[in-house]
Each structure stands twice: as C-alpha cells, then as structure tokens.
Image (cartoon, rainbow, N blue to C red; front, side):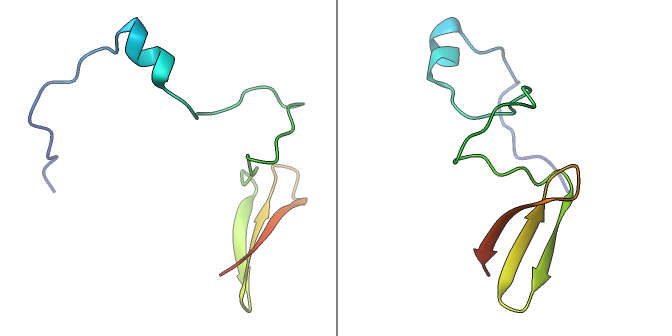
Length: 64
C-alpha cells in the first residue's frame, strides 16, 4: 500500500498547535468522563463492547 501524502510533512506552527485538541493524557490520576482507558483491552459480549483499564478493571460498557 502506498501512502497518499502528496506534500512533504512539515512542523506545525505555534498558531496551528493552539488549535490542536485531543491526545494522550500522561497523568495516571486524571479522571475525565470524556476519556476511556482501554489499555487493558477490549471484549465483546452479546450486544455489548467492554473495555478494561491497565489493571484489568472494567472502564466502559457501550452498545455494539
């Protein structure tokens, strides 16, 4: 498969960086309702998707 990038990659400007959102949160004590910790993996059970945190605890249940 060939990448479809037509222009060379360039660094983002300071202004472009100010508009970027999202990304990885490195603080292990940070809790956010908008972030699901799925580092422990995912599983599907019947019509549910289950995600697990790094310690194996259930972190999210969502419909398939």
